[in-house]
Image (cartoon, rainbow, N blue to C red; front, side, top):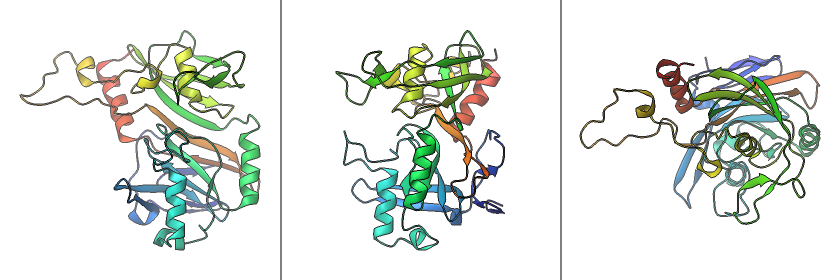
Length: 296
């Protein structure tokens, strides 16, 4: 089943547990356990899986390519928060089902990053969670598939980050004007020329993981903004051949960063709460091919 009852609420397409555990593949999810969103202006449609919900919080599996909050540089671009608020205003069926009249983002998640997005259902809960995530608390675990291999299995990057002075939407290292930025990294799995990293940001800066990995010369695959190239099967499989008139597509057509787990004390009870988002299909497929054709 996709939905199961929990002492701390309902779990949907993800996993809710008192401890952190990764999930390498997406579980099937019932249509009833999703939120349907649409943007008439761009004629786009999304079906967002619900990972966890109780009376205080709602956790969604945000897709890549959708900003979590409105983008100042592109105000017309649909964002998850704006789409949710539009649905609430027009009385969408999902908004009427349960206490979902107030939904606010509690932490940052880049537009290109998929995975766990935690929303507060009231202002007191929002304040409590903003204070938690603003206090350099560990508990947000991402996975990133990168080019290259780090020299150490565990490492930390604390390079200060600031907006690029000439390129809008780009973050860069800036020791004088940058804000404190700290990310912990750990090798999850090695391949020939590529590495799957676990990334734990202790601060909440835009593009923090991607910018720090560029500093480390380990660019995220599928992230041209920070120097990452596409990953194609022809790069891994020596005898790969295209059929006539066939065009090869990249294995990952997006930045290969995913917020896998969010672990924190529940804002009301203080009990440990851990929410896990399954890997996107493209990431799972890329890992499968790397294991087969590019073992370390």
